[in-house]
Amino acid sequence: MSRAEKYLWITAGLILVGIGTLGIFLPLLPTTIFWILAAGCFSKSHPEWAERLYQHPRYGPHLRAWRDRRAISRKGKIAAISTMALSVAIVWFTAGEMWALIPLAVLATIGTWIWTRAE
Image (cartoon, rainbow, N blue to C red; front, side):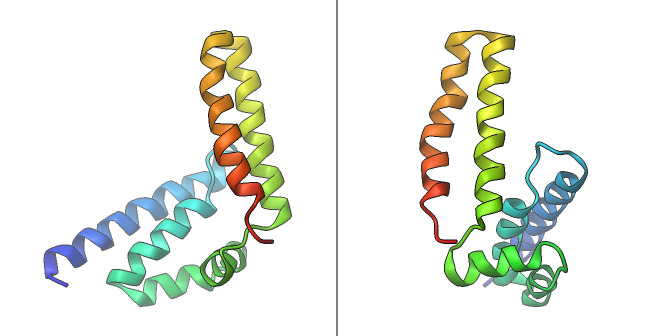
């Protein structure tokens, strides 16, 4: 891997960690998915940083479950699908029926995919 590629992966990982960290404080922004993506970036460029994410006391078990088994906890599944359903309702009441079809399509496709992952 060239130096430019390595720095690109590190930069992407740092941005994803930053967005994921915002998710700790903003309830509708997920943390774990951004940290999963960051760990993937770091595993290509700086494995020690990926390992620090995997050892995080709160999010580490979720990251390791995804890395090792492609698994999502039942609590995580319920939280993700509930949030998507809430977004359908919010869009329905604020923007109208037609616009609500977009988050409904996301819920139908991504929600189904999430629910079928191992636990």
